[in-house]
Image (cartoon, rainbow, N blue to C red):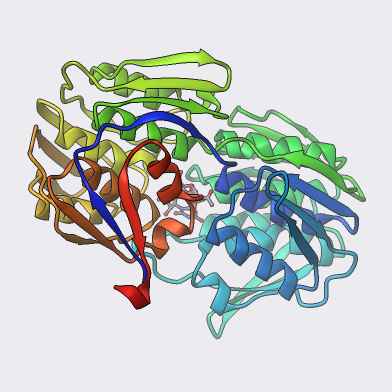
Amino acid sequence: MDKFRIKGGKALRGTVEISGAKNSALPAMAAALLTAEKVTLHNVPKVRDLITMAKLLAFMDAKVSVTEVPASDYLIEAPTLNHAEAPYELVKTMRASILTLGPLMARLGMARVSLPGGCAIGARPVDLHLKALEQMGVEISTSHGYIEARASKRRLKGAHIVFEKITVTGTENILMAAALAEGETVLENSAREPEVTDLVALLRKMGAKIEGEGTSTLRIRGVKKLHGTEHTVIPDRIETGTFLVAGAITGGDLTIKNCAPEHLGAVIAKMQQAGVPIETVNKTTLRVRGAQKLVGSDMTTEEYPGFATDMQAQYMALATQAEGTSVITETIFENRYLHASEMIRMGANISVDGRRAVVRGPAQLSGTTVQASDLRASAGLVLAGLVASGETFIDRVYHIDRGYEGIVEKLQGVGAHIERVHALAS
Ligand code: UD1
């Protein structure tokens, strides 16, 4: 397994270009199953989860091709789908495989999707996806570890669905199912994340009738058929936030290009509160510099437009360098503090009690070998490594490869001493 070796203490300076959002590209690829025509997606990041999604679509007999120049484009064409199945081997590496369930039900009226199983950041069930589909006329049973879904009529029927809890992929799955359903579907308490809004934009280009994106009520009038289109995926707001912290934590000066500052309101406000100078240069560019004085500031993760749970580990790394106490409260996922114990091993003063972590700083971190436990935890550890004295080795970086395009090269480009140590050479 590959590792990262980081020699900390270098202020990062220069320009970084942000890639497309993994969490937008995933539902966009699944949405291509809704039509027999070609869907072309631009600005798709080169990350492992999207290769897994491509394999999944190919398993179902969709044609998926990737162009590398000028950027990464995915061309997906699904004239016929023969295997309406998401097998365990693919689902176990990527929970977002569940995003194929809604489109398969809409297009074929049947699907077999492996249950995602355990996950390092808590139980993460899919019950809300399934309940919503049942309201749309789908019979669901589980056997041999698989969800078996079958529509009682050829087309799903529109329904009034109130999500008990806000779920991002749940909202996306049902949006896709409802796009081809008979009649109107109303989704209440839906997710307002920019990635949901981006999916609505794509579905609309495919001919779907949807209103209410960016609010918690979505209205979908089902149509009989959707068609092919082209779409450019929005910039990755979590990658952007990660580089904001990288610039701030190392006392550097970074210009972050090709990003969408309007999607980072809560993260920018919180970092500014901690004393980090962040400037919105224009609609697609941010500049971040090291704080004169970094101060502790409490933070609670929330659904969008609140502070993203996917930025919690990175914020914790920043908090270890801030003067005073930062109380972090994680409200979205249980058990999402696995990075805290690794940061403690590096010298951070953090105590965790259930959903709350109290970080006291500043702490002089010192490099050691740490283990990445999930995608965003890995990013938090990379950031801690960038300020630690000596060398930090991060194990299990396959987690970070799932969602960050070229993170080593991008960090090297702004002066970080980081390298990938390949398994055979380690
Ligand atoms: C998505 C993102 C992930 C992010 C998360 C929260 C993708 C591919 N992934 O994950 O990066 O961290 O949103 O912003 O977009 N829940 C249930 N039952 C369900 C579904 C969810 O109880 O059927 C719970 C979850 O356990 C969690 C909460 O709802 O506590 C939110 O989860 P959800 O928004 O569904 O996360 P994902 O869509 O899996």
